[in-house]
Amino acid sequence: MTFDDLALDPRVLEAVKATGYTAPTPIQEQAIPPALEGRDVLGIAQTGTGKTASFSLPMITRLAKGRARARMPRSLVLCPTRELAAQVAENFESYSKGMKLNMALLIGGVSFGDQDKKIDRGVDVLIATPGRLLDHFGRGKLMLNGIDIMVVDEADRMLDMGFMPDIEKIFSLTPFTRQTLFFSATMPPEIQRITDTFLQNPVRVEVAQQSKAADTVVQSLHHVQSDRKDGLPKAKRQMLRDLIESEGDAITNAIIFCNRKRDISVLHRSLEKHGLDVASLHGDLDQRIRTQTLDAFRNGKIKLLVASDVAARGLDIPDVSHVFNFDVPTHSEDYVHRIGRTGRAGRSGKAFTLTTKSEQKYLDNIEKMLGEVIPVSDVGPAPVEEVAVEKPAEPKDEKKDKPRRATRGRNSRRDDGERNSELREEKVAEPEVEAVAVVEDVAPEAKPERRARRGNSRNERENDKPRARDSRNSGSNGNGGNSGGGGRGPRGLGDHMPAFMLIPLPDFSQRSSDDNDDGSVADAA
Image 1: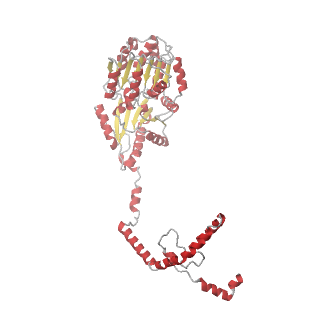
Image 2: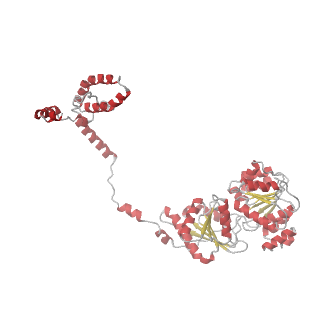
Image 3: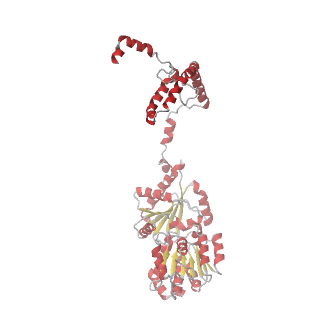
């Protein structure tokens, strides 16, 4: 069968031939005829089988007649990611050449103003991500009661990303009489519930075994081990570099998938440090950077692309020769989509998966879904022992050789405290009675002085403060307050008198009389 047998618009057929396609894929062959008749279609096919053309070609043919009104699009295509939405828009532009159809792309990272202008002029084909579509609808810039054809692409990915509540809301905002084209690579129970609710007697098209990897992709599994748990990431990066080096010039373009965004940044810097041509792609990047990175990867300017699962769905890059799963995907269905980036359109490809002991449960789920065991390969990476040498073992030896400090238990600390307390008791036992007596003798003399100072001015009181402190200090010497106005007990110490304050001072009275006898002090005065 050829495209000429599918009753498509002649202008669409010319555009298809210009792209180089001559024969439809199985999903296109079975889905296009009922879609042209206006029936609902439920398409189940593995990624890379041509699902985009299976709904875009009949849509363009049906939309050739009619005209769109402002803010009321005639058709709607929902995509899970910005990259997939942009790629669908490119396909519509290619297939609708020579036809006067207006198209608008509503995705995040782009200003609302430019998108509003396109919607105001009237849109025949509206391609959007669920979040941005509901944003426009909530702002009153868009009405969905004129939708004749609605397409949900990569529905299982929508489920994984948590878009199902948004999808159900969008379904409720569109007319009941719409035609629905629903495409997915897998059919989990939640997707089956959505189709049973919103599709009317759909034609089920299933062209491949559910959750089966493409036969054109050669898969291999590589176990990573390390003597230390914290050395696994380094061992993984070493094994990845060994695999890339072993493949050599056979790699035209390769995608390296990671589960977490922070791992993408670390791996990107590591590969770049070792002189490899690499770029990164994940959801936190600005849309302009994401678009530029994808364009450079398609054009062969970038050889290696470290990416999250953003690049796992719907990206049509024919020259991807290799896929590396740096991390085993946590969702088994994502494995099929990741390795589906290679081996497309009849080409052959290779998929390498690096796994550790902690990822074994994810690997078991993948092999259970595939119904087969991924072959383990020992070709390419360095032996595990060589990788383990890279991990530093010196800190362990240093800790063993380092002399240990003597440890003190609770009993030793308690004994020290008891000894210290006994020493303090011995020092303060005798003079404590004398200290109390001194305080009692001088206290009555200090009070009148303090009452007299209260009548002074503020400046005088401030000037007296240092003298008051001096008098208190001198009075605490245990000398009977000879410095004048002293003799007060130490403030803030309560009944306790520190031992150093009970040390008797030398008698200066005899010394002063001796000085007067020889005349030295008198002369100085």
